[in-house]
Length: 97
Image 1 (cartoon, rainbow, N blue to C red):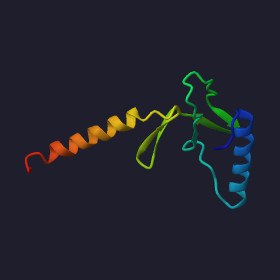
Image 2: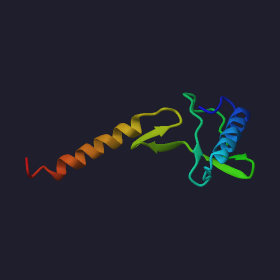
Image 3: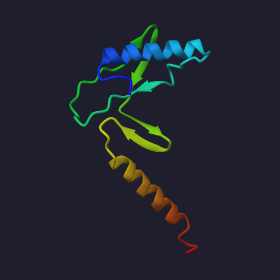
Image 4: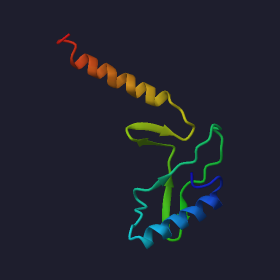
């Protein structure tokens, strides 16, 4: 977690970017996204965030280690995906069983 509000997120991300530069790392803004997580579906979304001359895209969901993470911590999509993968596996070996 980088912060609880947009200003804190900007400040902490700026610190992270600077620390990365100091050790020779470069953050790729095309591959770097951010997400605001809340149980409240009506929370105000900030859209893209600008830090220096870099823009970071806000996303509602992403894959992390093969699992789908959503901004409202909704597991229905992940469960549905796993059921579908199990069904596909079963039907691919059904003749063998």
